[in-house]
Each structure stands twice: as C-alpha cells, then as structure tokens.
Image (cartoon, rainbow, N blue to C red; front, top):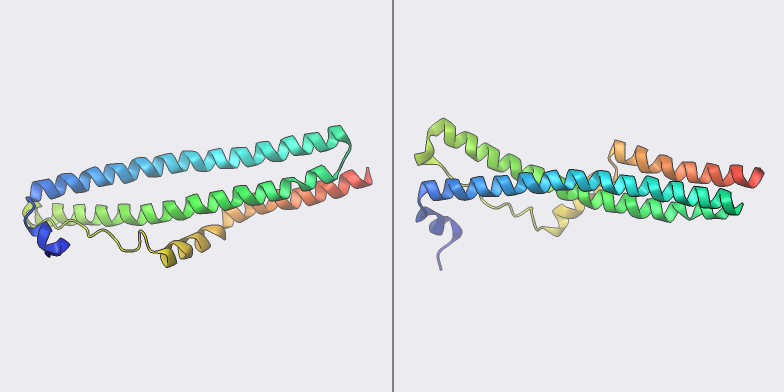
Length: 160
C-alpha cells in the first residue's frame, strides 16, 4: 500500500496548492469562530455571576453567591478547552503559511504540501495544550478574580 508521500507525488502541484489554500481558509474561519465563542463564554460567565449575585441580594441569602463558583469554574474549563483548540489550529496555520512562503520562494513547481501534523489528534499533546491554556495569565486573572469576588461578596453579604 503506498504511503501518503508516495500518493502525494502523483497529485499535480496546482491541485496540492489549491487543497492547501482551502485548508488554510478553513483553519482561518474556525479560528475566527473560536475567537467569537471565547468572548461569548466570558459574557456568559459575567452574566451568570451578575444574575446569581442579584438573586442573592434580592433573596437576602449570601449562600447563593457561592453558587457562582462552580459556574465560573465550568466557564473557565470551557474557555480552556477552546483555547487549547485554538493553539493547535494556530500551529497548523503557521505550518501552512510556512509551506506557502517556501512555495513563493522556490516557485510553485517545488511546492511541497505540509504533512498533516500528528499533533492534531494526539491526546498527550492536546492535554499539554490544555494545561498551557488553563494557566494563561489573562484567563487566570479573569476567572480567578471572579471566584475571589464571589467569596468576598458572600462574606460581605453575611456581615451586612
């Protein structure tokens, strides 16, 4: 059975280039959608936090504020998974862009399509990306401050 590289040799260069450009456009559209979703997740976190805080004040029950903590942690996890996916897609986009840059440097006749990275579906690499994404400074500051605010507000509502 022929390998991918052997099969790739029989594909015309302009067809390879077209396929790679289609993939690059697809990756870019997914990245754009993921950025939009990231902001939606953060908006949901703020909305949930605000709604539970308002309910806590309205019901005069400070323990309701503590319900924001699991919700915030869930949104934090969702944001982390999205960020890990984005990191993998950014890496793939760079691989494609480098191949396209090489094609423009050496000419289309010498164009070699980038090999589909084994990192894309590798569970170990995905977990590594999730770990990096989970502890991002901005993400930690955003969601961590919401958790701390929940605890402080619950304490203040108990005092008042």
